[in-house]
Image (cartoon, rainbow, N blue to C red; front, side, top):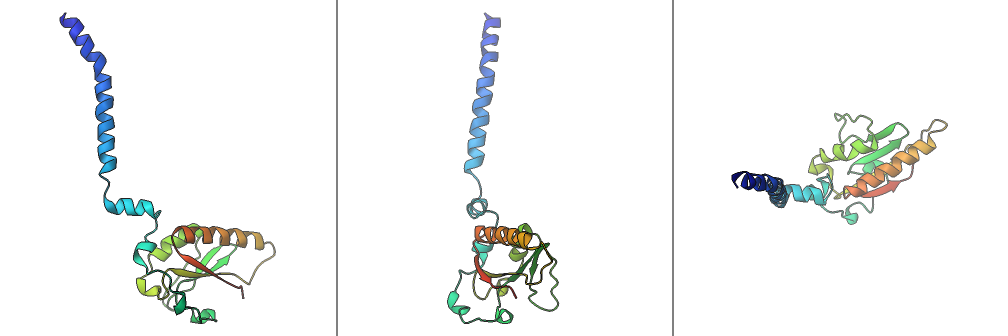
Length: 157
């Protein structure tokens, strides 16, 4: 009888282990910190949480790219260039996927119009650059909008 009792206990062990594992997973997933839940709600970008909403009245009268005070991105076949905030700021050419991370590092004073970015295709092109520039622009716009940024498309020079 003692052997049968031990065998019955052994057969119920996997069920007990599965039950405990399921309870632990449920507990951990329900106790996720609020900051992680917010990050999951907005994708991986923190721009929407940190930068004021777009205020078109602040930039409606801007007619020249030199007057634009928010981030200004130029799309090339080999990547995206960000117009520097100051002459001392160096900006490398980035892939569309790297642009959102770059923008997240900018201080809030770099966003006087709110969460809006100017995007312009490069006017200087080598033969065959058109299709790659178009792909880069489309990917850039998709990623910016996913991060919550409004995109203002500017004509190429």
